[in-house]
Length: 170
Image (tube, rainbow, N blue to C red; front, top):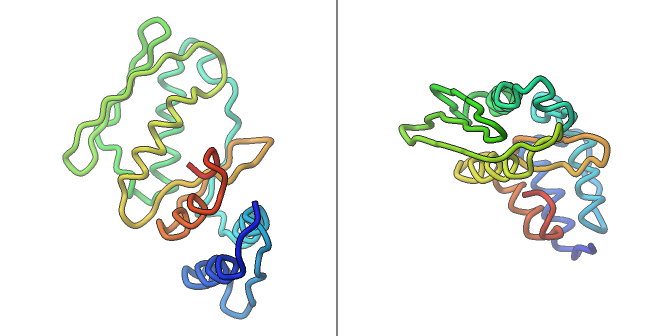
């Protein structure tokens, strides 16, 4: 997906503004959204990204515990901004239930888990929850081999949402 010269300059400025690209390096102007994503990933500090295999979830009939571990990794990635206080989980049959509070608001997620792959509805929940944050949000880094996500300034995430395909970067 092509981006305009103005958009190429905008993403380069954003990466410099948030110090993703070191001050001594000149950001490369991307021709398309995938080159912009490549520039982001190339310079992104490891503390701002996380990756995991979306497989072997619940293989011991403990999917709720696996999802809870994944959520704790998201909490760590966000340096506590994704609050997840009083995090609990349970499983009844194929139904996983996750509960927590954040800034006084109670969250209750229920979804069906049928295979050993991470559930899309769970991912929808975590991205929707992240979108409620005002300064930083989760962004899918679109790795074909593994699930790779970053916790980035909202302005950067919004740029990729605006210029990328609908299914990307949610």
